[in-house]
Image (cartoon, rainbow, N blue to C red; front, side, top):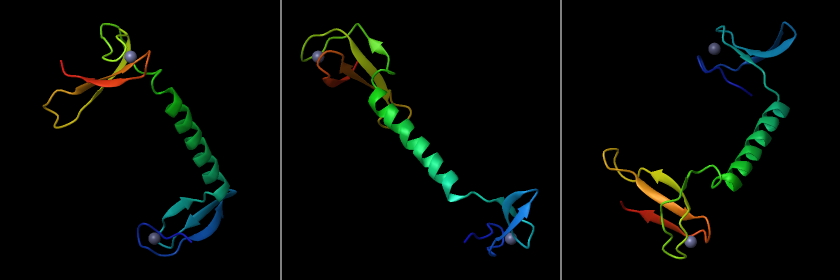
Length: 107
Ligand SMILES: [Zn+2]
Ligand SMILES: [Zn+2]
């Protein structure tokens, strides 16, 4: 059951121009979304998240003027994270391409 966001009355299902809608006596109208449509959207979102999860490193820029403290490799992915307030400089994080070691770079 759906309620009107304007007056909190129960929305009544109606058909307008061949489309199912929910209508309130105050004039508020809402397109009826069937549960199948919602399920489809959710599936799409989880799929996208899964892709991003495995691909996050590949989308990061690579620094080639660094040195991994573990294996001395000179290439690492890097990204910036604003740790505290906006007026403090962002902390640079690096992840070695070779051994996957992650460390902070304090300029
Ligand atoms: Zn209403
Ligand atoms: Zn390394």
